[in-house]
Image (cartoon, rainbow, N blue to C red; front, top):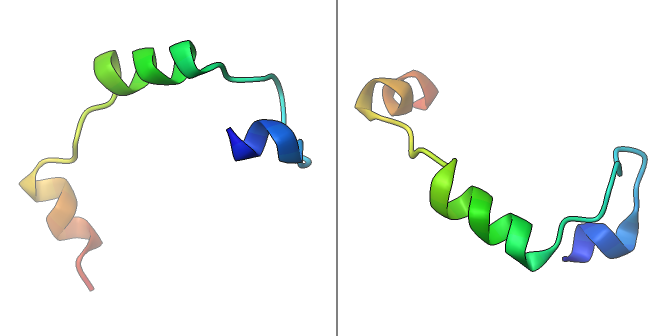
Length: 41
């Protein structure tokens, strides 16, 4: 919600709590082991 208030250069639209919850519950997919291995330094 802080980004809604900041409205920085990349601000496009307000994200409601309902929208955030939907994306988090239905669209987010945690990275698998191969993807995590590519990030390891």
